[in-house]
Image: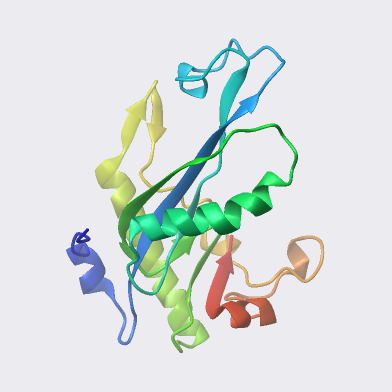
Length: 199
């Protein structure tokens, strides 16, 4: 499958030497047995399942350096992620894994953090790159905002990254005073070949 071209705003916004990558959303879901009242849950939690079961799921973003075939990502998730997750012991059926290409970008979102591949940019260049990424996502949210059940639903959740004062590098201990300046270049990040900014 040929991926769509990058958004012109991204191409215009790149720093010298900066690279963009394909972002995929990986979304496994599987049925679990339940023995409690969930009558106030929405229909999507039960669609296609017999009484006494509901859907459970997970979701995350991946940003490989090169485009990957979606069947390959599904196979890898089934073989590597699912067996590790399955050990939690909740009775469940086999997963159905959906993978979608989202967009080309420079940063990938996690849980209250973002990361990118370390391509040799210095700290100030990394922070500048991340600032530009945040602005692009804010523009995306302005363009593609939806109102669902009376609530504003943005296309991309920045999880606080829009607040510059929240950015940090590594958490050394407990509390906000034990955070290093961004970005994080700890041994774990170096091993993965990334730089990370928490928020």
